Length: 109
Image 1: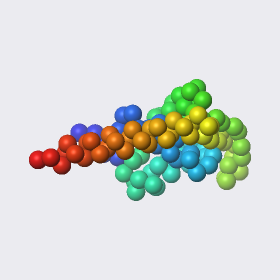
Image 2: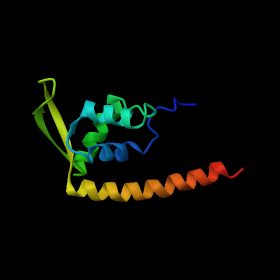
Image 3: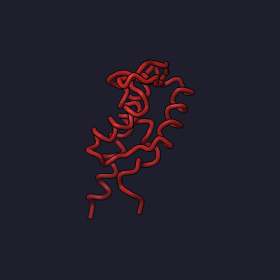
Image 4: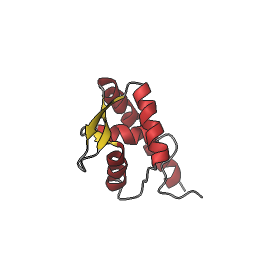
């Protein structure tokens, strides 16, 4: 069985969009926020994160710009677009129904 801390396929976009709800962040910050907010049960590798960010940017759900980070380094910062906020709302609604359904299946013994 896969390490339970790996991101379940199909949830990464939701986690990234949710992380950006509070404001713009660079990639490493997004990965850390997901790790921290999940009490280290969800770990996102850079090999998964950056393709997801590029995919979300192509879909115009996030936009990016270069800025100087807290460590005085140049970093690409990502933020939600209006379309991204709308998509996040729909994804959260779907995820809530889905997890309730899964909980019903695994609880029924």
